[in-house]
Length: 293
Image 1 (cartoon, rainbow, N blue to C red):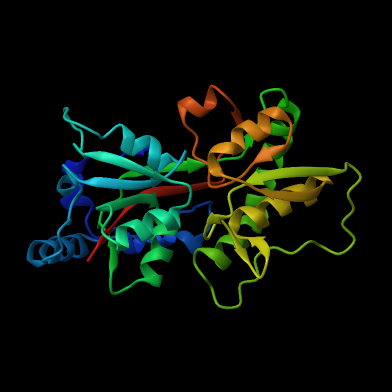
Image 2: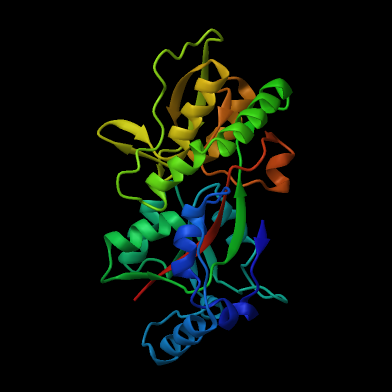
């Protein structure tokens, strides 16, 4: 994970549109995008003339930021409370069980901003276009991977092999085309006819409130992680069973054996690596800041 310095705001301004395509990347052209100096200048000019209360990361000083409990946003924002060199100096962090609860608190003026994954932020802004927006620069970059118990290194190795193969054959790209690039007609992943499961069932722990990675649609858990998890299990000869739970319960569920692996847009951090093993990265993303217009 790479924290983006506040002082880079003017340089980074204008990348949010490109980030919508590059936030979750493999080798796919569907996630390729670029920002230009002119767009950065335009975004900076817009920020200068806007009446929006919070326009840059520096404006978060003294403000209350909402986060989803146990997420990367929670960990990062907690480090920004109070005074200190290169700190945002926010007043406090409010933790919520769901990202949607944090956004609702923002909409009702109970907090000043929300820190959350950029693709999730995009969905909230699209649902509330007259009230919400995101800052033009992300707060941090991060890498997503699958959490596996340290007691199960064979499964980690098997996942790593399968991840590489599914990147190479275009399966991951097809899923990203469906959920990130939203390519017309993109079907994502479906289990090939004749797939068998000689190795039994693997239980995947997730938090189905993190669209587009995992969310509930028509009573089923869908999204990038749900489809990619299914593709991985199909390739390895396992049926997939998905269990929905609070995000901060996932690592404990994997370590206790209640689940075989965790897949929930989970960022690799040093703190988590002390508790759990991670596979190779399958997606990269960024933390965005949602504010009121």
